[in-house]
Amino acid sequence: MIEAFDTALRLIAAGATLLLLLLLLAGDVRRALKVPLAGLLVGAVAYLVNSSSAAQSITEFMPLIDLASIITPMWLWLFARTLFERPPPRWLVWAIIGIFVANWLVAMNYPQSQQYTFYFIHGIGLALIIDMVRVAFADRRDDLIEKRRSIRLWLPIVIAVQTGGILVLEVILGMEMTDGGLQDYAPLHLINAALILLLTLFAGLALMKTDGELLARVEGEAPLADAANNDALSPQQRVLSDKLSAAMEDGFYRQPGLTITGLAAHLGTPEHRLRALINQSLGHRNFSSFLNRHRIDEAKQILSDREQVDLPVLTIAMDLGYNSLPTFNRAFKSETAETPTDFRRKAIGQN
Image (tube, rainbow, N blue to C red; front, top):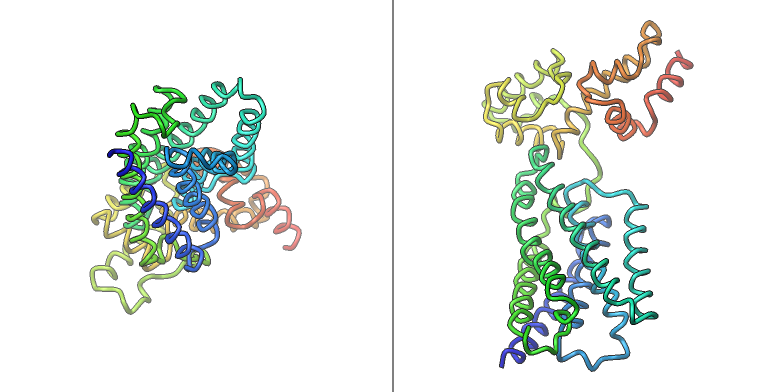
């Protein structure tokens, strides 16, 4: 009876996931999110099949289904990191894919090694889930988009319970857990199928009403503007905007370790009100991008000044509130596509 329910749930979940994949491909989701999300959906279907007792007879395609299934944590990690605007280096993504594929090839060609590759692959998957949870919580305070801030709370918890829980359970129980035909683990497989179906339905609701702030294409940050000129601002927002502009003109952004909590306290306003102003009126998605826009603008002025040509770049970085030279260099290159040293060389040469 349990196996019959399990098979039915898996068929429903697989069908819902494939429908979700079609919606994704036809929707206005930006490409950086569309690729990992598509991989995640394909991997979810592959896992539903791979861990089902009813599909164990499909021997011809099972190796490829197994490969798609084991890479699923990587797609989940990449999707979450991209959604939270902390995408990993491209080389790291390809390296992780290479590790999964290499272990899969070893397991296929050398069956005696399957026990070792099984635990190694699960260890990599758990490490990716842990990193996803770390990024979600660590950068939450910097996030200015309220809907995404809430996602940073529930998404890691849901994923840790479902995906992380299954990975841990499979490591504890060993390779037998992955064999969907074993009667001893039928209730666990049923619960897992139900969780996957619920996650798929939840994701479907999100995609059916694609949120432009979270998933749709983004052309980039809005240029720094004076929010006080926005006629749509309420009187309270105008007052807050004037306070914010005055604080930035006084160089408050140079404060080391400045957070939106600290800035809100300085302006005497609730944090959520300041977050909404910076996001909705100035067009910034993260507080760090708002600070960097001010800091990098001043840095470009200093680096272009012949009178300050001997001022070390490290000193400039520290004076602007950065805690290290590499952090400043990354922020500067992100804004200008060149290093501070190269910018200074070109700017001084042109003056």
